[in-house]
Length: 110
Image 1 (cartoon, one colour):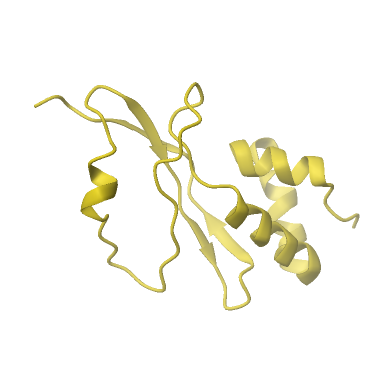
Image 2 (cartoon, rainbow, N blue to C red; image 1 turned 30 degrees about the vertical axis):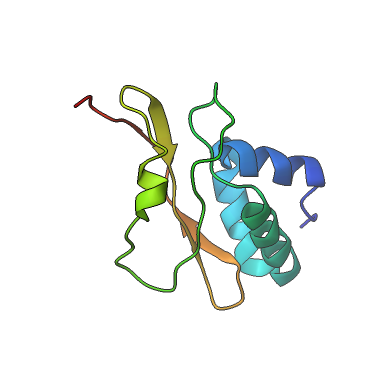
């Protein structure tokens, strides 16, 4: 098993593991050092709006559900704009356990 490269980590943080998902998950399950490095890379790379807009809307960590979006964050969203979200579950050491696919959404107008 070879360690992840910084280029791979950057690519996965920006757009998810894609076709490498199975390899990433298998490697993270076996290599604590890479799991820690991957978790740190994910935390440093905030979530963004759609691919054409690099504005950060919100990124957070929570210990348990439910999670409520703060009012000041909700006010940053604009009707008709395309956004996406994803969730990464971390274990007690901060290593990713699983994550959701990118979920797009658009806010309806008033």
